[in-house]
Image (cartoon, rainbow, N blue to C red; front, side):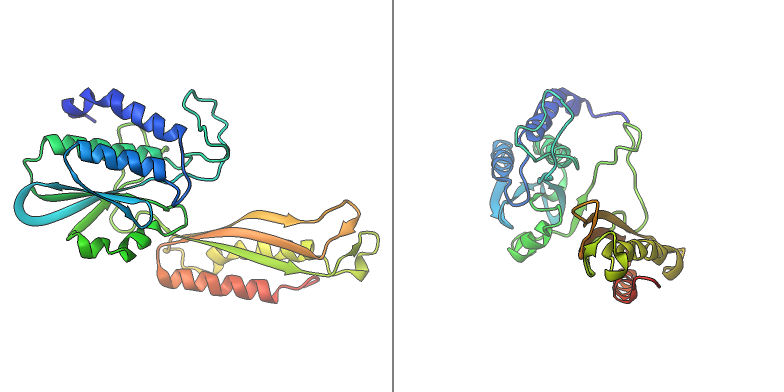
Amino acid sequence: MNLNPEIIKIKDTIIDTRRDFHKHPELSFQEKRTSKIVGDRLESYGLKVSRNIGKTGVIGVLKGKTSGKSIALRADMDALPIIETTNCKYSSKNKGIMHACGHDGHTTMLLGAAKYLSENNDFDGNVYFIFQPGEEGFAGGQKMIQDGMFDDFKIDEVYALHNWPELPIGTIGVNNGPMMAAVDEFDIIVKGKGGHAAFPQNTVDPIVISSQIILSIQTIISRFISPVEKALISITKINGGSAYNVIDDKVVLNGTVRTFNPDIREKIDNVKKEISKETREGN
């Protein structure tokens, strides 16, 4: 990939900006420092800026030529509740919070695009720069829409990207159709009857039942969903038990589902509920 020479000139500034965001991550709808920096930078580039859209969201407007057409470029700003252990010199200073999903990079890239386009605005139409809060499961984009984003700003199309570390440096991945899946999270609470591990016959063991549920859930994709559809389901957390010699009365399973098709999403949810409801110890 051959970068524009004007982009190369501001490379060090872009790198420093990204590392600053990485060092000061903020959780969803708490991106006050980040959004202030974003808004101030956009204003310094000569853009008209609207703040606090969808709580902490920011939109910058860059006017080009007067056709009236417009596009929006969007980035997300929030970080994750993760402890950073990279030991980088720009590691997170906010305990228990980390830009582990790369939104620091997304925000920085969009600021870089805003700076470049503001200095080369000989294009037709207008560009809106959307900096979204609360992407990590908090529907920040929806909250910006509910705050009137598409009523107040006449946006024809929206473009966005997401970093993909598996791709070689300098490569851009594109796809015909949906690129990023819808995400659902679920909890399954398995209630049994506790007791001493030496007398399992007097208990209803929720760990055994949970094991059966986990194995059955793994068949949803392979046996209930067409092989031409894209979907996945994973159990990612198991919590249960308190001692070596005690059978507890409850296990909690947590997991995630990823889908592209609303009908498949609903089907997985229904089958998952049926499996959880019908599974019994000893079946």
